[in-house]
Image 1 (cartoon, rainbow, N blue to C red):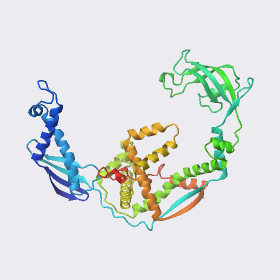
Image 2: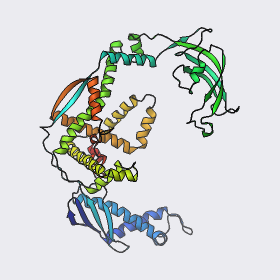
Image 3: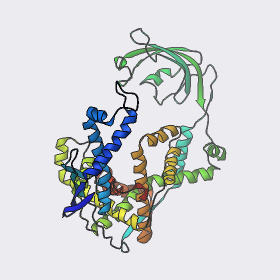
Image 4: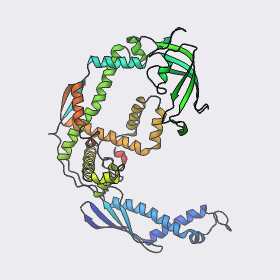
Length: 456
């Protein structure tokens, strides 16, 4: 194989690659021998079809298959030989091919720019600590108690009121006919929450145990059976029991039921949870401060193909007129994200930062813990979507880089109360519902397809 640099302009390099016709013929003969064991043709015993017959029958497709394999192998070798760091997939332009001829092609390659990192020593940023008031913690405690209330039986003669739990069987009809889902057993409704059908709860107020209650209700507009949407239905309910809410005592026993050691521990957990909710956004503000300084203090030439790909990702859900309207802003944002991704990746590589598969799996476990009952769904999602696994890996890698940068720069911690935190968050969210600057290009962050993911 002969590889020459035909031209080099900016980040674009064109290589000329020639594969000797003898090598092509060798690969072709090897493939014909492989196929001899596989091909079954009438008049020949299995494995005994002559290569010449196979070639006469399938010659063009076999040649195309062999050339495709040669192109994949020699492209990788040519890039490696010239020590090029490519951005995206190279373009192949076949100049000469055909049996008995040298394979001659050109590779058009967009290369990653060389990145010269400036010192981050003079960078400044503000991190936040949110002080949560006792009143807020008590309100959240009450909400938790309400969500986990216990009920006790009422006497048979007591009527149901708002807040009570009514347990019943029902049978329903639409236009005097049964339908799918027209019967239910042991349904439990907490009156006043209106979780079943609109107006259903109100009609159960006043019922007693063992009553037969007939009532009307309208089926929902999003009913699975379109023909039943918004239909009037008649219900006959057999009241099995009426229960009233028990007073919940918020004490150590309640805390243990919620998985805490005692009430002090439960309050501490609630405080951390509320604080964490604020910090999710406040940390994005800190991140943006750092990214703005990194972007401002560096000049990087960007490959046009990466810009085009990033714009495509940013605008994939936009209508043509929206794309045109926001064309300049989208290009600016795409360039910003690619630039930051390249800079952060360079910093990560210089500091030998990596992310192991175990770290990604641990992060997935954290997601599972926050989604009780949906463990299988989360695990299946990552198994079926390798790109999602790699994307998570890239995000962890980026966070590692940012944490390292934070450790090197002047970070001031500012304690704020809830109102101050809400004001800061409101200001931060003004330009965009989600501040796009805190996102870096997934392409640049993953250092393009030519770089091994193991770096992350």
